[in-house]
Amino acid sequence: SGLPDHNNDSTEFAVARATRPDTTITPQQVFDLVRRLPAHFAPGAAWSYNDTGFYILRLVVEKRNAPGWTFGQFVQNRLLTPWALADTFVPGPENGYLYRIPGVSAHGYVVIGSGIAPLDMTEVNQSWDLGCGGMVSTVGDLARWARVLYSGQVLSARSTVEMKTATMQSRARGTAYGLGTGYEPRLGFGHGGMTNGYFCEMQYEPVHQTASAAFITTTADFTMEMTKPLMVAAKRALG
Image 1 (spheres, rainbow, N blue to C red):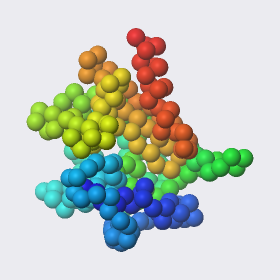
Image 2: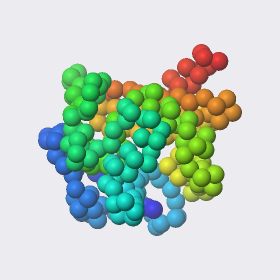
Image 3: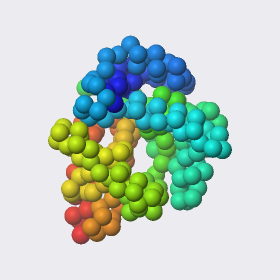
Image 4: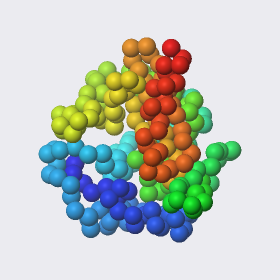
């Protein structure tokens, strides 16, 4: 779309989270920020990953779903409950936007500099990340979701193909990205995501029909480079 990215093109909300982790970010605040930022390119002219696009899609889901569910209710009723993903939670006003993670969870830390103790960011309001991430899950649930989604059990056959098909704009950038789905030759179809203190990755390899997921509970400059090599090594070790 070329839209500015409210998470990755500005530190405004990151500063707000660091100073007041319970702060709720509203859609109006997101759009006010986006309007102040320059566009990356004309719609359709190129490709880059963009959190704001997924954030807007969440608002469309809330506006257009027939029962009138919130985004959290939609995901719970249409996706999590039918596929028995009992350890996955969606941020919403009913759970304080996951400022408090339900049950027992691993703490997440942000590395902010050499010689400085990592910052514990486990308790952070995820309202800024609705639709583009910010959910709570487990490696078991993520691997199960990767398997049912990419093996064609969740969407129609046509939608599954569209989701997996890399756009020509992404190929021009040297990657293979479809509709919210990337492709790695060594791991298959999947996606990764990062929020304060946590990075995760899920993949489904269709030839051997294997699903995998990984979590890292520290975010730093090097975090995004760690998960895929670890998953490839684990896949090789398991044969």
